[in-house]
Image 1: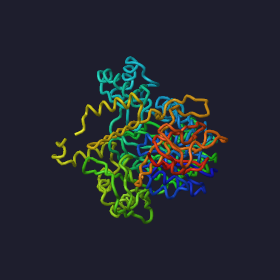
Image 2: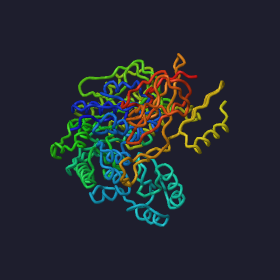
Image 3: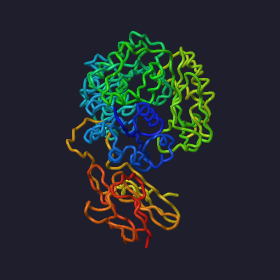
Length: 457
Length: 151
């Protein structure tokens, strides 16, 4: 097991990793930017190293400074968390070259599954369901039209190097496809440094169901069942839950097993999530694989009892997985609300500034993953998520009730947050019935917008 | 009102000179521009194994930052993370000590990171008041290295 690790991240995930390391008796080094010098999580670290000014490009993304910090503090491994360098195969390679363990997959496995086209190939071999589309990249218009004819319009043009909802363009018919290809290629090249495109059949109003998987360095991989992340706004998740409401367990089990098989075939080590769209007939279609620990990992931790972040460290240290697939059982229902420092009544305008009052909820089955406390100043230059509120109860209905109560208790002042929006969603009929698709919140927000606001620039 | 043409010209200058930060002030206004470093890591893409031990992009040695204290003393701060060395080799005498005169291009120390030795220059004129770091000590970004009494 490692003696000392460096946490190359900030905020709630840095604290999360720190806690897992502490439980394993591992010393921690936290890197931080000048903008984060008063970050409350830093007080928990054994050592802290400043790696640059506020902007992430000058600090949390500076591979050279992070590696230097790792060297001068003599750490055995680096945990990248999520975002920043977590899915950067070059960073994973630099760690390896410098004999520092990267807590995550090998650069090869990361690149294999991170590239959407090669990932689809591995998925096919693992019998993981993917949406009908091109077998590889579409190099030219002729190939694109051929694929679209075969799978049927509408189709979606996607960047092989894209992800997280970016680099996508819908083509409703042949004309749209013809005119959309060149701009899509240019955009992909500019945004991701790679103009490679592929095509998929476009599915509308689906649900988003993802499978959590773990793979170790001894060739074993297991799944930890699913999370439903249908509650989104512009491809950003707001609420996640497990299990996915109303899904046929047999279908779910088959998909989950194929996701574990995909990870195993890719020789992927660590935690990963295989994301799917689910249509009205509960057919699953793989979207992409996230080669990192995810924001919403606590949901799965609550219903399976597995400490996912701790497992990433154990796996990286070479320990074999302690469970067989049949040892993993789902118990109860968990829901997570992502709390953002944004004003939902003013187009989700970010709300940086001083948190004067911070009264977190608590009690049985209530968990809050946050770095924020009273007196903390939320910086303006990072993402606006300030915490995750997770509840677990025996049934979904009770979990919703528990979340209502926890949100009512949760006080953050004077910063505006998305707590009131989550509170409204806990009373929403579509959410209560699990009768939703990935655009239901956007439609809800649009309906609720007063006419005056809609016409304001 | 900020002049857009002036801003565009500043951005052009930044890009053509590969600057990552530009801070301009006069009595009336202040403009700070930042752009991602040209050394930036690219998003996850196909891995081309580099085969080299130090896989870090080459760049000129970073420049020390200066901060004014209230008493007029200037702090020379580390522009990088690494190990501080007071002299160019273990046998050589230190670049500077208390009382040494420095100019903007006077080397004051070496900071080593990933086997690359970066010579750090004073970036100011004056006399070294105090050396704050011991030879061989690790330093972080922004850490004060020297106190200088400006001339």
